[in-house]
Image 1: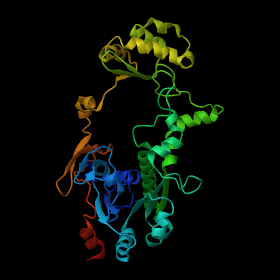
Image 2: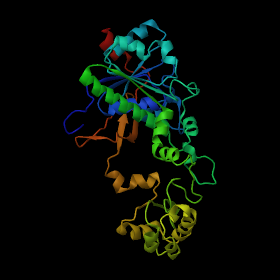
Image 3: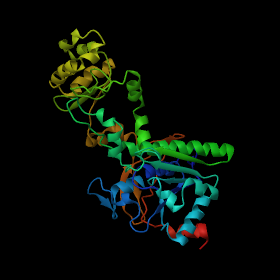
Image 4: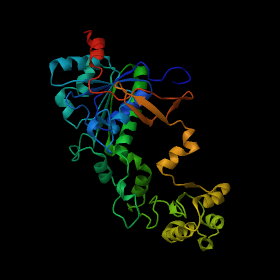
Length: 386
């Protein structure tokens, strides 16, 4: 709960028709901010994310991935080809403030739940839609899957060293960014609705979101004659940054070095081999040579030894932690970043909380992810008076 005693989106009703990660992550963030989110699922299996495992773990019959991204929601099951179920769905849409869906182009139109149709039922509705590649162009029918989008976007050529093949991120970043962008658009339309009294249609795609994620380096590429990024051959961390930028092995772990003077770094590390690189231009043109010197030098002492030399001089560096080390660190504990949720069957899950603070307060919720159709009777009674 926030310091003011309520969350900014309290009183708003969100219908989440989405599956997998991108759309449900947007609905999750709206729930964290106080909205009531009702997840609309197929009776036979529900959201496909229930059976999408990123490990062998499951909780109460569903994947932990589903539980992590669908906490703090209610669920109704509906067959959208059934007239009685469609009656309930229309009644909900007429009452809703926000509707989210991420079907492939053409699917929602066949259901009769596309924006042009539902805005006739509810002109104040803010309708959020995520596609893989937009609704036009030769890729609009491709599967909107994160790895495929990363591969098509050019992103994978920024990761890894120069002698490696394209390297994807180890996270579903296209999904997560698209969900975040959808939330931004929805909130903007809700503000406009408060001023003008009309809803709106918010559209994002995985591809456009991942292109925006690369806006700095793509802008450089488009303005330097179309030169392709050149990954460092040694400890690459950013294809567009010079030495020492990268992660280096030490005697007992790994050390991250960000931007900074190579000359100053050489002095702090007592690495005389770096003293010849006086011209900052060489920190990029000869970065592999510089980084190879650092690679060999830093192995001679522990991470703590090097940090004790660099941090007092305000040289940007950090130890590289694994999750076990992170979760045990007092800096992590100070954030109160985890929370416990529990579903209606008593199954509990440790997960992260919303990263946003409102009025100094943390946004947490103990409500776990729902079973398929868990709230059918309750919601039908509310909406249809049955």
